Amino acid sequence: MDGLKDNWLTEGLIDFEYKKYLLLAYLKKVKDSFQRVELYPYLSDLVFHYRNLISLRENKILIGESFPKEISTENLQKLEISYRKMIEDDTVMREIESIMEYALPQFKASLDEGSFIYEFVESKCEISPVGLTMLYANEGYLFVTQPPEKETNIYRYQITFFEQSSEPMRGIQTSFVETCEKSIARTYENIKMTLIKKYTSMPNPAAYLVLSKLKFPYVQTLMPIAKRLLVKEISKAA
Image 1 (spheres, rainbow, N blue to C red):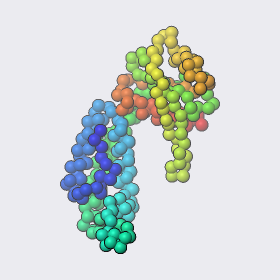
Image 2 (cartoon, helix red, strand yellow):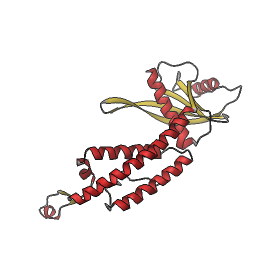
Image 3 (tube, rainbow, N blue to C red):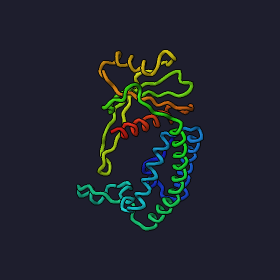
Image 4 (cartoon, rainbow, N blue to C red):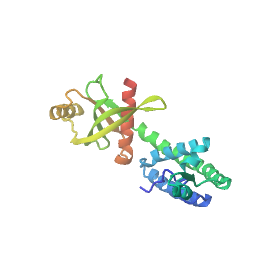
């Protein structure tokens, strides 16, 4: 994926037309991806860039701090290392502000399009426990399947906790276990029992199934949404 660099705004030539060209080329790739119903990694990138611009607009000091710095020759001669900010004049700052004002609604429009697709895909997915609901659900198995529902991909998951804005947040780590065929005789509950016998490190695991009613790009769309659905489901039960 040809993404947009984190510091695209302040890296290289600070010119409105040049930055506009970079941005529109990037957003064209995003739109092409969304038309294929491929959400990731572009959707998370859009969230990052949009929030970053909002933050820069609200705190212009961060703009200066985001510029690369160069070693001052004068201080280097004195064997002292210091940094001189490459941005000093108001003309460049006004150019940056113009770029931001143009870029923000562009990012917002693409983000809205991605969010609409995300909500549609999520609405076509169902999540349910496989077998009994376990009291401890921060670790277990995640089953993911979509039409024609002949095969189910199974992952081992672990919920992680981290601090963000002084509030605990949940994340998820997954590792692929295996792909199992499902049939009338081989139900999801049967598959879970087979896993318990085969992988004895989790003798009494939680297990959840994410079932999509429609077929979507698996890696770029269904799997990321399945993981988010699982995090939300476990958060509700906590």
